[in-house]
Image 1 (cartoon, helix red, strand yellow):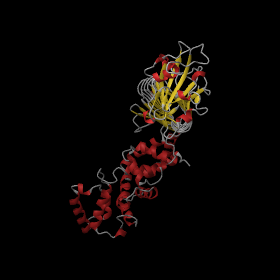
Image 2 (spheres, helix red, strand yellow; image 1 turned 90 degrees about the horizontal axis):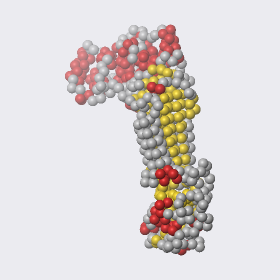
Image 3 (tube, helix red, strand yellow; image 1 turned 120 degrees about the vertical axis):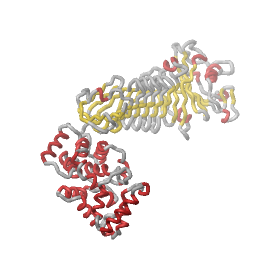
Image 4 (cartoon, one colour; image 1 turned 180 degrees about the horizontal axis):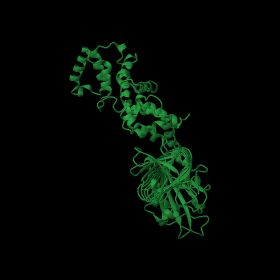
Length: 567
């Protein structure tokens, strides 16, 4: 159950302050959190940075725990020590109580000699005692004072806990141990202390509250800016729209939502109204840590290279003119490249990824994704799941014949979709003509392209003989060339006689030829029958893509399977 604001302030005061604030002060402080004047993290940080802690003895008492017990202080014992200090006990008296506890490493129960006590104390304090040049002389002097009775062990501990230096083992852990008691109400583990080193008090407090499921954002979105990087966490409710190109952000159509905003990578924070300035000039936007509440996210990249990470809901993200990186999450994301060379990663949802005008890299990730090629040399990787690879419109390839190709990297139990290539608005099973390229098999398995009509797909396998070209064995198989595809149409009957189409088209038509062999996988050719409709010209043949199979997959068996090719 979440702790109340008043209880959190009370706990912070008990850990950090010797003199406890009045109930009215605690209530007023708690109301500031409730009224969205400050956050929970800010409230704790205010108390931590206050003069009451700086001039008090919370830090010294924490050091006593590290020295005596070799661990961070626990809340119960530590607050008892703070109460002793508040009621007039000196640190020497608190140290005496510590020494009397049988669990301590330096406790009276250990029956250590003065010499052993001092040696152990030094080892428990310093990271590398031998590197501290003044320690040997001090140890000799302290041992003499203890032996002479002019100093007690408790007095020595008081001196020790008032000393702070980067050479101390626990130097970086004192603040963290205090904040764990405040934010989590418990002792910090050794691993937690190690991970906290180098983290600012405010950022650490925020992290601890999150770990113990105490919302540090009080149900608000948290916008953390570090240079030109924006990370958004916490909770936002409604439809979020971020447009870096126009420096605009809206939530559910409005810009008056209160958010927590940090301009210095989380070192400080304040509650402000959501404004366009929150996203202005950002080159990286990370929403992957967003909590529940968002109904949709729409993101548009800017004019420079932009990186975007989607939250775990359906997200629409569009690249800009730079080389952008758009990363989806577990939702059904729609990612679209822009003018640059973009990288799109779908994540775990059923995603739709579309290349833009640059040389883009599309990776669907897990899920049955749709990957749509654009202009440029695009690389499409489906990932886990039965994915659909959709080729671009024929005009895209024809307009950019030397710079547009579609490379499919991992064709397995997937689908090829040529509907856009054939200018169709919906995808249906294509008419597929399949067979081998060995003309000697004309009565059995030789590909029958005489029945070819508009929007058909030809699957042709090279098992070692391509019309008149015979390979010695599979090692001699090479990928087909444009002239080979031309020969398929123009040396179909014999070495000098072209194919005779059963139905000569009366309108310009497009076809697709997929040439496959078990060594080189498959190439995809666009046939644009636009001039002399009864024949196919060399100029009408264009290589538009290549398909690599997933290791261990029989690509030919998959290509000829029902429903594997749409058109």
